[in-house]
Amino acid sequence: MRPRRSDRRTEPRPVGPPGFAARRAAAELVEGVLRRNRRLSEQAGEDGPLARLGPADRARAQALAATTLRHLPAIDRVLDAFLRRRPAGRALTALRLAAAEMLVDGVAPHAAADAAVTLTRGHPKTRHLAPLVNAVSRRLATEGPARWAEIPPRRLPPWLEAPVIAAWGEAAADTIAQVQGGRPPLDITPKNPEAAEILAERLGGDLLPTGSLRLPGRVQVSALPGYDEGEWWVQDAAAALPARMLGIRPGEPVLDLCAAPGGKTLQLAAAGGLVTALDISAPRLERLRENLARTGLDAEIVVADALAWTPEQPWGAILIDAPCSATGTIRRHPDLPHLRNAGDIEPLVALQARLLDRAWEWLRPGGRLVYAVCSLIPAEGEEQVAAFLRRTPGAQRLRPDIALPEGWLDSEGALRTRPDFWAETGGVDGFHAALIGKA
Image (tube, rainbow, N blue to C red):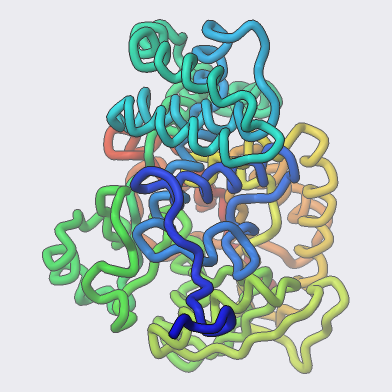
């Protein structure tokens, strides 16, 4: 007896060559950035292209999308040599993914080409372009490597290059651009710093001078030892420093403003702080809830706008990881150059100033505050703090009690990291953070 239609399996059957599901998801991620101005992280939810993938395919899709976006100007330069004009929609995306796989990842050309053709043929608006994609893919396989080798050294986006050169010089800007063009390593923060050496040995990673662990970048995070047990969490080595600058003592209440996705909240809680984590985004705070559950740490979570929220009592310790251009994180977030521009900076600087002033009202006398931004632009960091100190009676710089590599703290005790620091081993995110006390 044949099964009724309603009894048959409804799961989609695999379509296309091996690995096609990950490539199709990568195509949707790239188009989400370039056509719908959505960050890669915003597309990782239950309604996004990754939702129905297993862990391995999910990781592959994210990696391929990131690689394509990271090298997009160079990829397009190579493709333009084989095209009279760029094709529309999914066909162009398929070619970009194929170029990333062949020229950057070293994937077998026939596999990348087959996937590109299948992607193009499977989309109703571009299926007629499948022969073109096939022909260009073949030229990519034979002529692409030579053209790729002729591409000039990468540079920062013009809107970012100017302020970086003005602040740190041309040599630093060139190195930052090269570091941001590479696949970043994976940094993790141990829940128990005293177990860092043992954890590094288990994971096959390196223990960094700052206390973070560094692993090769292409790994499936959820499959690593200690993940399920909550022994660590993913966090760039530089991003782990602002929370340490605050010097939280066990049992001390602390407010973490703009807390999502929550790496600094986990640090403060692991140090024994009684943490209140506040953020305006409920969806982003869900990731923090998951990590709190996984690590067995506690924090009170508040979904609110910091500019409208009022605490019940003053705080002795506040951490502000302020919204910013995130230009210091491009090595890990290659979608940002395609989403940001110079016009974004001024509104962000104004918002940061308002958050600083607002948090200062909540800080009790004798309290301390860390202001941090993952930005390379001094207007968001060094200049923002200097302006705050000029307008705020009783605010004074404090020097954090933290051991760091030489040159990472300036003469006034503020933290400045850049991607060209530790460039030979993958760099670090660009951060500025300052510890400020209230008289």
